[in-house]
Image (cartoon, rainbow, N blue to C red; front, side, top):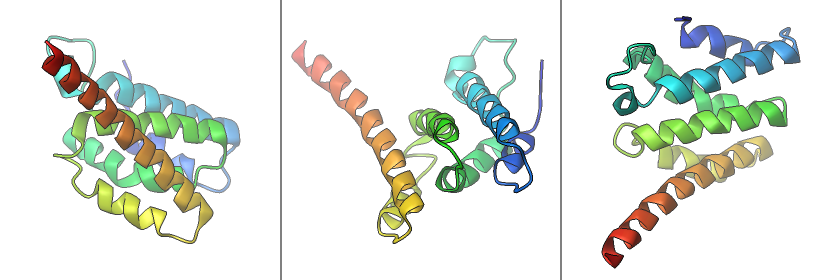
Amino acid sequence: MCQCSIYSAIWPLNADPVLRSTRQACVVWLKNRVARAYKLDELIGDTKTVPIPPVDRQAIKQHIIPLLVTASSRPIRVQLTSCVKTVIGSDFPDEWPGLVDQVVSMLQSEDLPTIYAGLLVNLEILKSYKCVLRRIALHDGD
């Protein structure tokens, strides 16, 4: 069982001399690690999965959007967007209160990659609320 630090997966994503295949391997590992071990409530009773520690959870929230802005290829953006989706589903809005302000700032930028990343994150926020609104509508229909 790998207990690698999140930092070891994040740092190669923006390093210049790193091969594209290495970047993709790092981002796939990060996406899988986040998908399996980020949502703490889903890990109750699971003795095989090591939860992502709070310091690494904070590092993910701090670095994931800047990584999305500078992502060098579509496959890397897709994996990073999947990470964003998982973190939003677990932590937004209570444990990631600055996210909306960050997205608004990104959408007001004149830098196209920043705007695009802002749109991707905004879409994930909207999708998360769409699910919540569906559950409320189903509950109200009972």
